[in-house]
Every structure is written in structure tokens, then in C-alpha cells.
Image 1 (tube, rainbow, N blue to C red):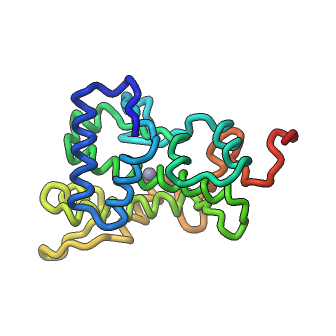
Image 2: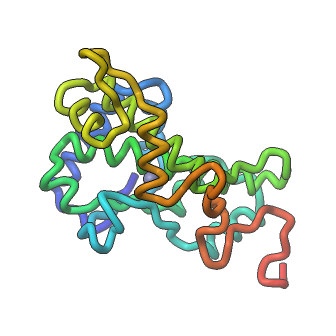
Length: 219
Ligand SMILES: [Zn+2]
């Protein structure tokens, strides 16, 4: 990962620390996401929540370059991360502390990986292998992985999950609430299995084009 100049030294250390914690306490998949962030050329940016669009978000840095790379073919998942920027909000760090950073990197890290997987799969040019989830699928899986992470961490992390409705506490027995996640997606994101939102490739302008598609009517 590379930090852009928006991230002060002190916050860089906190983010590096958060990734260490995810590798220590996370599931196999979460540890893989943390390593993906550490080892790839993903950009980390820090901004105010109003600009970031919440506690964190993903931005494609150069859709034209990404489409050219897809057109050339053979892009690895790690290389694809070079076109991705993970934004974290100032407020997430200041009010959420270490827990907020970990939560954001687990959730947004999943989204970042989805983007990288899509770019890599599109660059293969084999339609049957395209990875192009809907907004519902992306948010469902990101919320699911967040819920499992908060449950594994326990304590105040689990409290946060209960507060969000993505964990439930039945007489001291914690479980991931799939109903709670669905309710949250419907209420906060207007996403349901019947109204799943846009596919990942449709989020950028121009859209992501699989290999073999004529780019700008030229190539
Ligand atoms: Zn999300």
C-alpha cells in the first residue's frame, strides 16, 4: 500500500497497526484481505467523512488506465489494486479509534478486493469467469465479514456489532445476524435481493469493459 500525502505520519502508524491486528485476530479471509492491502499498490487516502462519503469508501483512480490494462490482458489481483484508492474518514480515526480503523479496513478492504478481482477477471477475457457482483451482493458480503470480525474480536467490538444490528446477543451467546444485515441493507442502502443495485463494472464512467470489448470505439 502507499499512503498519499493526506495521511499524516501518526495516522500511518495507526493504520499499519490496525492491519497487524486484523492479521492477528481475523479469519483466513480477513487476514488475506489485510495482506492484500499491505502487499499491493493500493493507495490509502484520508479525508473528511463528508468528502469520503461515510466512514470509508473505495474510489477508482484512473478508469481509463484500468480499462487499458484490462484490454492488454493478464492483470493480477495485486496489480489491479494499483487502480484503487481506499479512503478513510478523519472522523473514523478520531472517534472510532483503533476499532474504527480495523472495522473500516475489514469492510472497505473487502470492497477493494472485489474491485481488484473484477479487474483481474475482466482482463482474462473469459466471460464465464467474470466477477461482477451487484451492490446487494457486495454490501452483504462486506457486512457479513465485518460482523464475523467484530464477533471474533469480542468486547467493545462486539458491542458495536450489536448496536449496528449485525450481531445478536442471545443470553450471552453472540451470533451473526443475517436478518439484521438484510434489514440494514434495506433501510440504509435501499438494497434487497429483488432490488440489488448496479453491478460493480457499472459504477465508473465510463464503465469497466471486459477484454475484447472495443474501447472508445477505437481499439
Ligand atoms: Zn460497504
